[in-house]
Each structure stands twice: as structure tokens, then as C-alpha cells.
Amino acid sequence: MFPVNIENIEAFVYVIHCGSFNKAAEALYLSQPSVTARIQSLERELDCRLFDRQGKQIQITEEGKRFLPYAQQLLLTYQKGKLHVHRKKSLPQEFRIGCTVSVSNYTIPELLPGLKSRFPDTRFKIVTGVTDDIVNKVLNKEVDIGFVRNVNHPNLHSVKLYEDPITLYAYEGHPFVGAELLTVEEIAEQPLVFFECGALDWLRIHRVFENLDKPPNIQIQTDNSEMAKKLVIRKAGISFLPELCAKQEISEGKLIPLRVPETDGISLQTNLISNLGEHVQFLNAIIEIGKQLNRQ
Picture (spheres, rainbow, N blue to C red):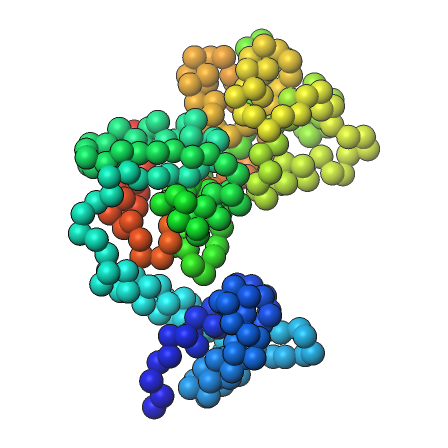
């Protein structure tokens, strides 16, 4: 029976995440032969092949797929234990949160009062950016946690916080208001204010119009949901928007949601990320507050 070598486990997880031995070596600051040696050692420990190698191409085996969730859990447990041994007992005086602009506009103001009540002696600093920037800031410890689109990284703990449905909205008095069923062709002919957030899920909105004879009538395109929302209210067009950003205007009757069967189920997922094992108290508090807000 071989003892468990956490470095071999780490190399295996990194190869899966990075897609190659070379890239895993770069991420771990190792040589490629060192990563290969660690994988071979792990294969001897498990008495099975974890990868099929065909030249420079690698493919995970069925045994590797079965072992992967256990490897990820072992690595996470080790990182948590390591940080627990060395953690400071006192809470930080300043807690830095990175988030996308939409989260800063619609989620953080709802969460912060609850966080302040739980951690009254902690100051909170909010930094906004796109998902990739926030991921890098968390990894580099420039911020403590991040609110981002759905991501997966071997050095990060990532948990789904909520999903925000994407819906087509019109202004009061628009001819579509009250229609039971709208076709994609009808929508494409209307002046559209197209909000583009760059998330992969948003590509599904584009695909709705792919098979039409002519492109949709996009009059204005913007990456700012507040601008898109205000343009709809001012009757510049109709727009697909995340539900959270339109919540208040829906209640006031300024924006009217429209049913489009082709876009049912499309939503933007927001994840909460942190370095493995860090800031557990804050993470648990945010998740708990989020659940309370969703029940309201």
C-alpha cells in the first residue's frame, strides 16, 4: 500500500484543468518531466492508467474520470487543513470583494447590510471588473472573494450563488404587451436594444436569431444593463435583460416581461469564489444571507 502523495494528486488535477502536461507544469512552476513523473507515480499507486497518450495529445481514461472527484476533494481538504493550521484568529479589518458591474449594482447593496451586522468591526472594499479580471485578482490575493460568472479552477473554491433569468422586456404601451405567444421573426423585426454582457450563456440569445433569413433589427448595442434598461423605458426598443436589473421597474410597471418560449430556461449564473479554504466565515455568511434574500 503506497502512502498518498498530495503533490501527485495536485499534478493530476492540474493536468485535467489545464488540458496538457506542459500547461500544468507552467501553472505549478515545475518542469514537464516532473509533472510526468508525478502522474506516473500516481498511476503506480492506483495501479491503473489515468491518461491515454497519443503524441502530444492526452485523454483522460475512464479510471481517471472516476478518480477525479476524489482527487479534487483530497486537494481541497488538504488546502483547507493547511490554511486552518496557519490561519490568524482575528478577522480582517478590511475585507475586499471583487465583482462584476451587475453584481455591484443589484446584489452587493442587498448583501452588505447583512454582512455588516455579522462583522461590525470589518470595513468592506468593493472592486468591479469582468469575470476574468476578478478571478485573477482572487488568485493573486488582490481581493479576498469574487462574485463572477460560472468558473472552475483547481485553486479556487467556487459555489453557485444564484441564477438570474434572461427575459425580453418591452415598455408600457408596446404592441407586444399582452401577446400570448411571440415568434422569433416578430421579435427580430422590432427595434432592439441589445445588451451584451459577454457571458457564455448570453450566446444562447444570439442563437435564437441564427436561422432567420435576415439579421435582427439591432438599433443599439451596449454592455451596460442600466443604459439598456433606460433606453427601453424611453421607448428606444425592446431588450433581453437579466431579471435582477429590471426588478424595480417591473414592480413600477415601467418594464413589462414578454414570454418567448425559445429563451425559456436561459439565465446568467453567478458564482462566489475564493482561494481554497480561505474566508470560510464570510463565505458561509454570504450564502446564508443570499438564501434569506431569495425567500423574500
